[in-house]
Image (cartoon, rainbow, N blue to C red; front, side, top):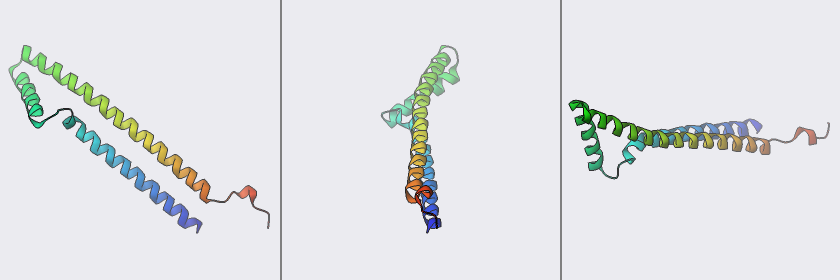
Length: 113
């Protein structure tokens, strides 16, 4: 019976870790798209960057500045997702540890046979 409890607990732990990683990955991929309120705004931003990089000069400097601002916002949000994942991992491991300790009998309280 102890084997079944440990097996199920480890399976649950692996499932939760996989789920946390998958959700974090999906959120990280969606962050750049969610920075804009509409599809048209995103297309206009990309077109402005492309035009600035192709033309050079002052337009290129403006494109670099816009790209740096955009990247800074994206990095902050991706960092928040990463810290959320780390917190979730710690919480899952702590919960699994407490469940394991709760499900196994305390050897100090057993009477000698």
